[in-house]
Length: 265
Image (spheres, rainbow, N blue to C red):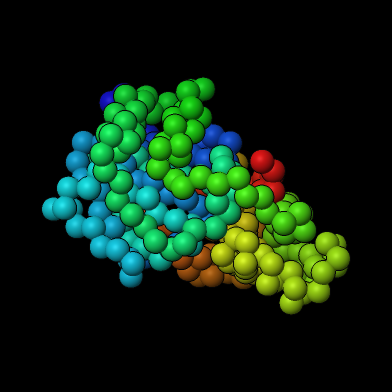
């Protein structure tokens, strides 16, 4: 597999590379593990040359089980990792015909579809190339349960505003779409699986990561991204990504696409 030299993300010395495409991403790494976390994304974890594993309340897949393809729905608390090269494909809920929320049931995919996805990831080059988007599309098509549902227009508008301005008060969000705070909270939670306040924290983290390449330090932009202090930022980082900021040599761009156009299709 053609991986770029010097693309390591982890202080542990693990090689890794992140490739971002519109509302999705591919993260390639070797022999990695996360702490318990839940990200607002569909995740397909592919073992390229060795098994991947998962621990959650809903499913436990051990390295010795030999699973090569795991599908993790949005907002599922889990720990995951791989014993060799792996690819994690992330997709924003509600895009690429994926459901806007998951049912909290991860699963192992086997058979011809799984082999097709593993082969596609093995053959992919870890560099910023136009076909990366095609890879994400292909993986989603063969793994994630697809639907043609659309978010309630009021929910989509509220989330679009949060993407632009994560600090927007909930009262302003509700007023802007003609709903009460309670009604908006209910609708957002019903359609996306998480309440507006958690969406706001997610967007603050995205704003933080979007600013990192220019400013050079996560700590430098923590307050400007809406975190009360560095400790608050670190807790949020672990909650959504399963790692502390200090564990990355460079920002985990795997979630950058969610910073814009959340409600678009």
